[in-house]
Image (cartoon, rainbow, N blue to C red; front, side, top):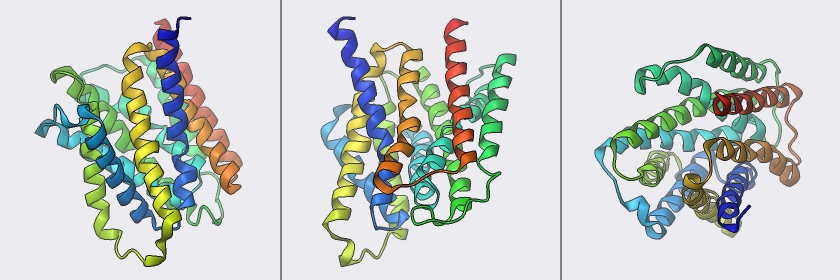
Length: 286
């Protein structure tokens, strides 16, 4: 494989690994969930708007609904991660393809095939497993039940984001994805800000470093890696590489915080990821 083809794949691996650190980093902050959500997105918005010219282009009113869905995804993922395990939060967000298939006939005029129904049933079954176990509260997961519900909601919002980006891509010149990401972070920052105050002076330098890392590196640098690489890598490979994120997310949380997800959560996550990989492979071979 030539160096020119290796580089975009390495960029996607880097992006997936950076995205995957979100759970452990979010749990490292002693700020409230609303504070982490607001300040992370505020830093990310500034980093993208200042450092990435594409984020300042192709901005229009058409981006607002999609950016709003992405903003909701950002906030809900942070809140879910603070309330339940990192594994539950990321695996439940990974159910988004189920909702994409449900939304596609209305928003994209794409028909659901019979083979898609098998995938949808598998993802729904995996999702149901998260709610079988009555998980007890822990130091890093103080309210698993509520966190799981918010995590499921983040999957719906991410599906709306993905569907909206596909719709925008059909009718807009250029690539509106980066502008949508930047606008979504601005909206997330503003939406969560009223609930982020007051910030106590005891917040300290450690929290500041966590927020800077989340905004600049975990969101900003990761999205730059994706946008630089995605057009040079076949869709199947890109999807498979990016599955590193939900795989590594709970591993980082375990290494950093000693957080161990429940048996049914691990089983449900395995079902969802396996179904996603199977569906992607099937689409490639079709």
